[in-house]
Picture 1 (spheres, rainbow, N blue to C red):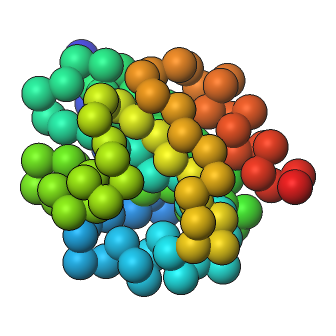
Picture 2: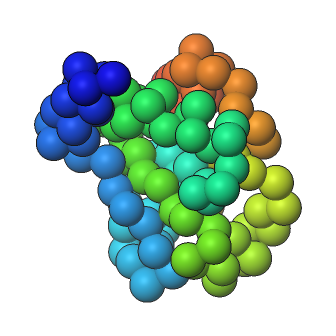
Length: 122
Protein backbone atom coordinates (compact mmCIF):
# COMPACT_ATOMS: atom_id res chain seq x y z
CA UNK A 1 0.00 0.00 0.00
CA UNK A 2 2.82 2.40 0.83
CA UNK A 3 4.39 1.92 -2.61
CA UNK A 4 1.03 2.69 -4.27
CA UNK A 5 0.70 5.89 -2.26
CA UNK A 6 4.26 6.93 -3.12
CA UNK A 7 3.61 6.23 -6.81
CA UNK A 8 0.43 8.32 -6.71
CA UNK A 9 2.14 11.20 -4.94
CA UNK A 10 4.95 11.11 -7.50
CA UNK A 11 2.42 11.16 -10.33
CA UNK A 12 0.60 14.10 -8.79
CA UNK A 13 3.83 16.00 -8.30
CA UNK A 14 4.94 15.46 -11.89
CA UNK A 15 1.66 16.17 -13.71
CA UNK A 16 -0.04 19.32 -14.78
CA UNK A 17 -3.52 18.23 -13.71
CA UNK A 18 -5.81 21.13 -12.99
CA UNK A 19 -8.06 21.47 -10.01
CA UNK A 20 -11.06 23.19 -11.53
CA UNK A 21 -13.61 25.29 -9.66
CA UNK A 22 -16.63 27.41 -10.48
CA UNK A 23 -14.29 30.40 -10.12
CA UNK A 24 -11.48 29.32 -12.50
CA UNK A 25 -13.51 27.31 -15.05
CA UNK A 26 -13.87 30.16 -17.53
CA UNK A 27 -10.16 30.97 -17.53
CA UNK A 28 -8.78 27.43 -17.40
CA UNK A 29 -11.30 25.71 -19.68
CA UNK A 30 -13.36 28.05 -21.84
CA UNK A 31 -10.49 30.44 -22.65
CA UNK A 32 -7.87 27.72 -23.08
CA UNK A 33 -5.92 27.54 -26.32
CA UNK A 34 -5.71 23.76 -25.88
CA UNK A 35 -8.51 21.19 -25.72
CA UNK A 36 -9.49 20.47 -22.10
CA UNK A 37 -10.75 17.21 -20.62
CA UNK A 38 -12.82 17.90 -17.51
CA UNK A 39 -13.60 15.07 -15.11
CA UNK A 40 -16.75 15.87 -13.09
CA UNK A 41 -16.46 13.77 -9.91
CA UNK A 42 -17.23 13.52 -6.18
CA UNK A 43 -15.45 12.03 -3.14
CA UNK A 44 -18.32 9.63 -2.38
CA UNK A 45 -18.43 8.14 -5.91
CA UNK A 46 -16.71 4.70 -6.23
CA UNK A 47 -16.42 4.82 -10.06
CA UNK A 48 -14.86 8.29 -9.71
CA UNK A 49 -12.21 6.79 -7.45
CA UNK A 50 -11.48 4.17 -10.12
CA UNK A 51 -11.12 6.89 -12.73
CA UNK A 52 -8.81 9.07 -10.62
CA UNK A 53 -5.47 7.39 -11.44
CA UNK A 54 -6.43 7.23 -15.13
CA UNK A 55 -7.19 10.95 -15.20
CA UNK A 56 -3.84 11.63 -13.51
CA UNK A 57 -2.01 9.50 -16.11
CA UNK A 58 -3.78 11.29 -18.96
CA UNK A 59 -2.72 14.66 -17.56
CA UNK A 60 0.88 13.54 -17.77
CA UNK A 61 0.59 11.82 -21.17
CA UNK A 62 -1.10 14.77 -22.90
CA UNK A 63 0.86 17.55 -21.23
CA UNK A 64 1.45 20.35 -23.75
CA UNK A 65 -1.18 18.99 -26.17
CA UNK A 66 -4.31 19.04 -24.01
CA UNK A 67 -5.21 20.09 -20.51
CA UNK A 68 -6.74 17.66 -18.03
CA UNK A 69 -8.62 18.74 -14.94
CA UNK A 70 -10.99 17.59 -12.24
CA UNK A 71 -14.05 19.42 -10.96
CA UNK A 72 -15.63 18.28 -7.69
CA UNK A 73 -19.39 18.55 -8.30
CA UNK A 74 -20.25 18.89 -4.60
CA UNK A 75 -17.90 21.83 -4.10
CA UNK A 76 -18.63 23.44 -7.49
CA UNK A 77 -22.34 23.11 -8.29
CA UNK A 78 -22.55 25.99 -10.80
CA UNK A 79 -20.54 24.33 -13.58
CA UNK A 80 -22.18 20.96 -12.93
CA UNK A 81 -25.58 22.57 -13.36
CA UNK A 82 -24.55 24.69 -16.34
CA UNK A 83 -23.41 21.58 -18.24
CA UNK A 84 -26.30 19.40 -16.98
CA UNK A 85 -24.05 16.85 -15.31
CA UNK A 86 -26.57 14.45 -13.79
CA UNK A 87 -24.38 11.35 -13.35
CA UNK A 88 -20.77 11.01 -12.30
CA UNK A 89 -18.16 10.43 -13.35
CA UNK A 90 -18.80 12.47 -16.46
CA UNK A 91 -15.95 13.54 -18.70
CA UNK A 92 -16.51 16.49 -21.02
CA UNK A 93 -13.96 17.66 -23.56
CA UNK A 94 -13.96 21.33 -24.46
CA UNK A 95 -12.30 22.91 -27.47
CA UNK A 96 -12.45 26.58 -28.36
CA UNK A 97 -14.69 27.25 -25.37
CA UNK A 98 -17.34 24.74 -26.49
CA UNK A 99 -18.27 21.24 -25.38
CA UNK A 100 -17.27 18.83 -28.16
CA UNK A 101 -17.46 15.37 -26.53
CA UNK A 102 -19.05 13.81 -23.45
CA UNK A 103 -18.65 10.41 -21.81
CA UNK A 104 -20.86 9.40 -18.89
CA UNK A 105 -19.53 6.74 -16.53
CA UNK A 106 -16.01 5.39 -16.26
CA UNK A 107 -15.24 3.72 -19.57
CA UNK A 108 -11.51 3.20 -19.07
CA UNK A 109 -8.28 4.81 -20.13
CA UNK A 110 -8.39 3.67 -23.76
CA UNK A 111 -11.83 5.21 -24.32
CA UNK A 112 -10.73 8.48 -22.75
CA UNK A 113 -7.64 8.46 -24.97
CA UNK A 114 -9.84 7.91 -28.05
CA UNK A 115 -11.91 10.94 -27.09
CA UNK A 116 -8.84 13.15 -26.66
CA UNK A 117 -7.06 11.82 -29.76
CA UNK A 118 -10.21 12.38 -31.84
CA UNK A 119 -10.29 16.02 -30.80
CA UNK A 120 -6.56 16.52 -31.32
CA UNK A 121 -6.77 15.14 -34.87
CA UNK A 122 -9.77 17.28 -35.88
